[in-house]
Amino acid sequence: MAEQAQTLPHWDMTVVYPGLESESFQKDFTDILDSIEALRETFDAEDIRLTEGLEVDEAVATRFETVAGDFNRLLDRLETVEAYIYSFVATDSTNEPAQAKLGELEQAKTALITLSTRLTAWLGSIDVEKLIDASDVAADHAYVLRRAKVEAEHLMSPPEEALAARLSVTGSGAWSRLHGDVSSQLMVSLELDGEPKELPMSAVRNLAYEADRDTRRTAYQAELATWEAWRVPLAASLNSIKGEVNVLSEERGWQSALDLALFQNSIDRDTLEAMMEAGGESFPDFRRYLRAKAKALGVERMAWYDIFAPMPAGGRAWGYNEAAEFILEHFGGYGQRLHGLAQRAFDERWIDAEPRPGKHDGAFCMGLRLDESRILANYQPSYDGMSTLAHELGHAYHNLALAERTALQRETPMTLAETASTFCQTIIQKEALKTADDAGQLFILEAAIQDACQVVVDISSRFQFESEVFGQRHDRPLSPDEFCQLMLQSQADTYGDGLDPELRHAYMWAVKGHYYSGGRSFYNYPYMFGLLFGLGLYARYQQSPEAFRQGYDDLLSSTGMADAAELAAGFDIDIRTPDFWRASLDVVREDIDRFEALIEAAA
Image 1 (spheres, one colour):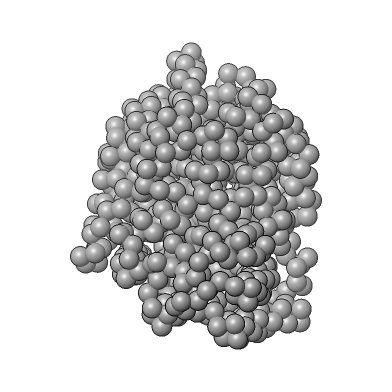
Image 2: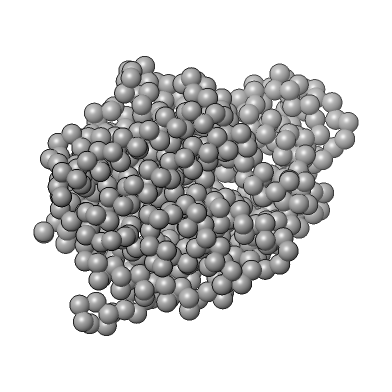
């Protein structure tokens, strides 16, 4: 249709600076570097460092207020400059000036990491409860201070922490950038419709959504062959990053990289185990879904390249403009604030939607200036494309709710970062189902279950894989073949007989950039938490919409000011027992039951 051929929007960054070479950008970039140095001088003047026997008095409270204010103001400015530079890298990784500026900024940020560590060490050496009582600013940052007290117990000596921060740029940071650059620049050779093609990896992976099975199979085989050709440097990257995390976790006194990740995500092992237990119980239900989808597709058993295949009937195309209109209408049904946020995003060109060479795969939302965000997508004219837009707009809504907080108060763990995105995605799903006929319902249900399958089953496989990698990496680096074997075993244990064992994806360890983050390990289970927590909150919204709205915005604005269990308790939710997670998964089971029934009726 004509709308599918429309030019998809690129985000507008000129409202921030005219360009990377502009005088205004260069001035602010230099000011950021100078401000980092000025903050170091303030830290020296206020003697913010590990100090034994320091009693909290009015002078100490004033010292904290001075450095906290300077830190927050610098972080606000840094967010904008960094997001601006990254907007060029994410949409064109071959942009050498942008890559150079990003590298320069990352180098400068090592000093900021060192200062953050100094502040943590200083807070760890004083009575933070007395500080909270002595200062309104400290009271506003009480949760941050109490977390700093715990984190201080897991610090190496100040010189070691400073060295680790400096080395991270040429260590895990460099390996992570290598993966991002390689994966975004990969060109894949394949034959489509009898003609040889060379397409960017992101475009080839998007072929997994094509209706024609031969096209999907061809893309899958070409993708695997390309990852295999790059497996040696990518395995070196993964080994180096996981090795560094293991060493630093041990030196800082964490029992494991997982314990560090749990702390970073503001949950405990009881919560994780309760959620994973409920998730594991749901695997047979997701396998039912996969077998039902195989029947609908007319295949004996699902292959990996069938996971994202569209349903054979009922799958209408959603052009970008049509998707925007639908989202605006039904976000408006929830509330004017959500509608207004989405309207700004579309009108002010916050979204970069066109897939193209050099652009990063997938989708994300990043904060730009307090209540203003930018969304990267690789839009396909489908319900899934619309659903992804709604998801990322949910992140932007979360950023809006956080705008009233200071930079230190806005630091949200991954577990809670998916709350608003899941909620907004669910709004669109439920509204799309209301007006769809049976064929349309089948398609929408499949998209929702497919997403849940990824977040519960595939995320579980990734969690299992990463756990095994961290365990074995203690002894030695792993070979590319060993990474492939661990990945296939993880997929076998989670997908089970829902997928053809000969047609899984051995190179998902190379695909997913989340494995390549040195600062954030186990970048997987928080997505499951986010989905199931968001579904649970949506159920509460349905019970009492008016009462829910104010409490919900308060929750979103407080995700950096309380842990997950405390925030959940505000809605009478206990996340440390499997029952809550089972209840959220029951919502998905109902969808699977309906999906199976529609498949049978259509047979």
